[in-house]
Picture 1 (cartoon, rainbow, N blue to C red):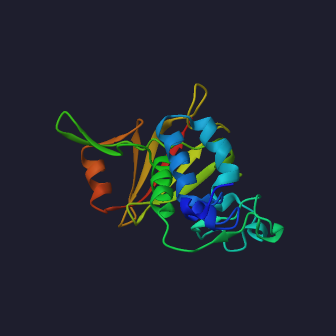
Picture 2 (picture 1 turned 135 degrees about the horizontal axis):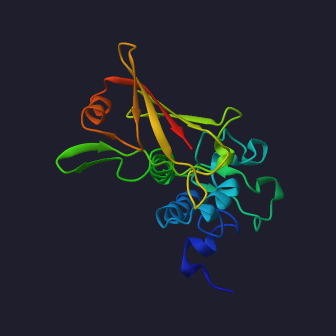
Length: 206
């Protein structure tokens, strides 16, 4: 075998830290790369076993709302630590998770200018199984705007048979509601959202 000169990869117990454990930020970098490359089926297939919120808390050993530095792998000689998350140092996994979350819930290049006009493009990348029994999924946009996607049929928001936004219902901070047809918000309404004057957005997809 190798001597201790090769460093941590040899010094630690197998399945622990640099020696064959699962470093969460590297796993998340891989997942984020799948998402950026448009490999959405592969991303969501991997997510079910790799994203912390989908893990079994009893195995993970802590709240699945918390990230870890690393997860002890199955090569560790102690079976009781297999799959458990440990915080040995700061982790970059939160940054990757937020990047994935933004792309999943809002899409890429959400605000953009076209013909000197501000546009808001909400283009989520979501599988059908993330919608609830009412075919809805919600998130908070820009820190205060509740965005709800409502699909008129059970389908992904990507792929050849995917659903896409057809119309919006906007509720202002004062409680007034406005209907906007089309797949995006332009001009006044894009500015109203960005300026914090819209309280909620319902985007109907079909």
